[in-house]
Amino acid sequence: MWKFKTPGIPDEYFERVEKVPITKEEVRVIQISKARLKSGQIVYDIGCGSGSISVEAALQIGSSGKVLAVDYDKNAIDLTKKNMKKFGVSNISTIHGNAKEKILDLEEADTIFIGGTGGDTKEIVELSQDKLKSGGRIVIGMILIETLYSVLQILHKLQFESVDITQVTISKSRKTTTGTMMLARNPVTIISATKI
Image (cartoon, rainbow, N blue to C red):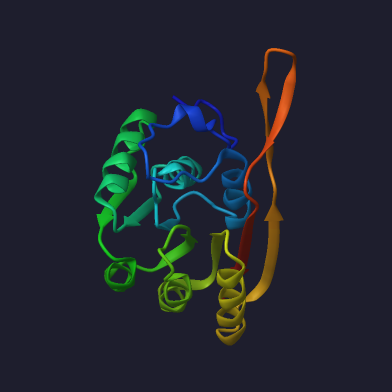
């Protein structure tokens, strides 16, 4: 369905259901670029939600790679499966359950995306340290200042390098009866770093 190599699948292409979040298109593009993905990599998508990051990563790493999509919400897992099918990707494995428990059983990863975690981001970053290969990348999307603070502390403690903080504020156009207006979305902060 997505016949381009570049990331940035429009949000409206994804199947959606109420109360299952999606990483918005422009934020997703930045997260994918910060991950520095390559063919054949193993990628985690922790808090996969609609599966938009999983699908985009799966397309980037190709059929020789694998995405492990984890979410505690059964609706999110079902939605991720629908989007896998819609985009014709078969290199995603969905895992239903608490990421703090499930991550322990996963194979080592080259890249770990961390999104909607229900307030467990700091603990998931700590667990990710042991599952990330040397030189691997971690990319964390967050909206709360408190989460940003705790993640920076733990990345410093775990001695990650090349820590980058990018805050994105997106406005999207909407047609009105008299013209076009811009509607602002919530700012999202993206932290990316490399395991030594």
